[in-house]
Length: 236
Image (tube, rainbow, N blue to C red; front, top):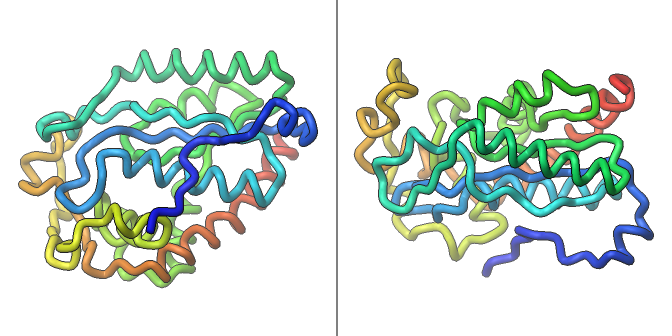
């Protein structure tokens, strides 16, 4: 049974009552995840993390960005991608609107590894931050007992399948345990995309996934976000 929060259902009154000066913006994508996960996987991942940390810390949850920079997946049907410049403008416009509504800091919750430009946007502002960072992803994987690394399990693997088994098991294809594909060396992915390294679109070990690992991943990321918030206050 699906149990996912993809977009906030709060009212204006709810936002006023909370009065949070920190906004959380989930950023996903709409791209292939083989035949075992939906095109919206990265948006679901980002939205789940954002919803969890916003609830736990009483923050203002913004609606997700559902299309982003997925050019490396464009040879598979269903993938929709926008240029980096468009994503930059979209994010900047949303941030500007949130600032006008009283937000003093916006945290980007990124669910898609190809959104490299988000780091540059954050680098140029002192009221923006990006979560999870590389060390957060690694720490969460270790805390949840994942057997793979982020490099080897990069797409539709143990991490993503585990998270969806936890929050939306009916969206996971029944054959996920038979879809492992390993391609540790991907030297020209940015130039040629993912297709030269996988026919299915999967790179990783979905067979190792479990709902228990997904739950532990979300719990660990929520705990790590507390440290992120402390860093935000120091930076300000």
